[in-house]
Length: 325
Image 1 (cartoon, rainbow, N blue to C red):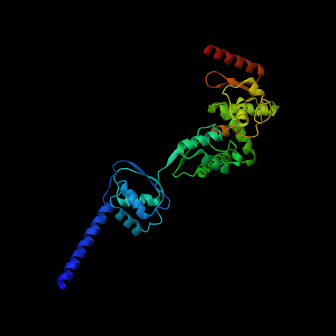
Image 2: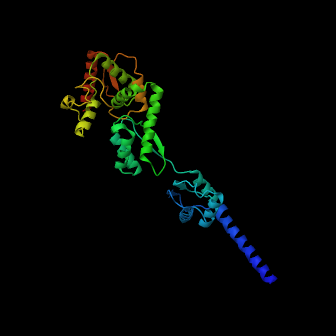
Image 3: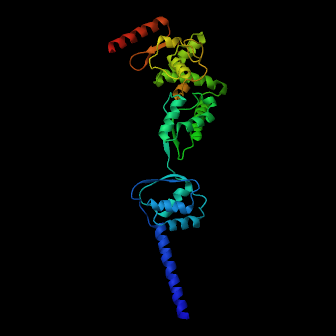
């Protein structure tokens, strides 16, 4: 009887030792995936499902050891869902800690200056793979009646699965933060948005933005129509849904709420989403007497404070265009 008991205890001890060795092997010995791999751990994934998924991708050695480790640590309900990137050697302990602290993959998207909302929606849809309808629905929750001019063009980081409303709200709050730094009077923000959107569409040169802002302010102060071509184009897009790409005299005479040839003052809403440089320029126009500007043929503009000087600049530009043809 004693001999059988001793044998049983011996076998039990061996079993425990072997189990411990196997668990230790599965936990502490590093495993290297056959190749770099991205894994999505979905919300509601159990520890067992997670362990099997990681093992199937070659990220951990033993799903049993991983599951045991997570439960022993008390992390069963604290593992973070999301997208993870794994490459190179790591043991189960390291993998567990990464998922517990939420070391998820980060993605980024860059929104160029001067886009309309519909263009931003299209860009985000193409970049993330989410239907544009999802982005449009989210936009209407973030921006009043979906109007342009409330999102700040910038590079934004996000995690997957992406929340469209969250990312768009980040863009809106980024603009509000910028506006708060450059203009304390919230009542003036809409005017700055409209001015900045015109500046954004008129020049791509940071050095010229305060000059364009000065032209706008000077013309408004004198009661002159702004006569800015981008406002005409935007009005055509809003009212007709398209623009041929060639601005004609007939277009300049086609009255819309945004046409600054047929109507005086600023348009009722922004014509695009302006960047930070244009917003700052709108808040601090240059102290110059300019009332006119025209392309100078080299990517910039020639500015003038009198009609006579402006006509000479226009003639010079027309001559350059003819020679190029």
